[in-house]
Amino acid sequence: NAGVTQTPKFQVLKTGQSMTLQCAQDMNHEYMSWYRQDPGMGLRLIHYSVGAGITDQGEVPNGYNVSRSTTEDFPLRLLSAAPSQTSVYFCASGSRRSPLHFGNGTRLTVT
Amino acid sequence: SQQGEEDPQALSIQEGENATMNCSYKTSINNLQWYRQNSGRGLVHLILIRSNEREKHSGRLRVTLDTSKKSSSLLITASRAADTASYFCATDDSGGGADGLTFGKGTHLIIQP
Image (tube, rainbow over all chains, first blue to last red; front, side):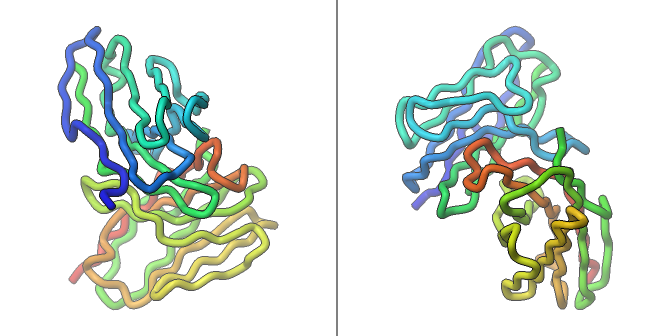
């Protein structure tokens, strides 16, 4: 099993550009979520999903969209990148019988 | 808003010594989890303790939970250089992680050889 796979590992965007961070899991987990990690701030929840077709907002959802058309995939879209979105983004999956499994992150820089 | 707050923010000890990290939280929880993050990597789950448990062990890890004080501690015994990492507590309010865990800011642990 690959676990949780995030792509790309690194990305540089200009202000105003859009992009999609990809996340895929092969553990058949019903829960998936996106966090951002900033220095001194810990991890903050952006969006989460409890199953295909169901998504909800976390603590810091502004500027991000998600969709969950399949159990395996949970992409995060940045609609119009801003320097404040410079961060490391982590995708995680889990279930009621399993703790969260994290990907290795995407380092995003917005200039 | 942050639910868990770890203390200390940074800890440096000699290899072989024990390391203790603390976590305080604000609201009722279903369970509390500890995660480790090595530099440049994702978080890895270490141990989960439910609200009706007071102590749990896993290898060199010992976790305690005091719901009356809304606090938890993580003890790593006989530390090794490979234990150098950041450690995060995370609280689960819903009992299944359905609305995501709430993480603290972490304790950065350095094990000196």
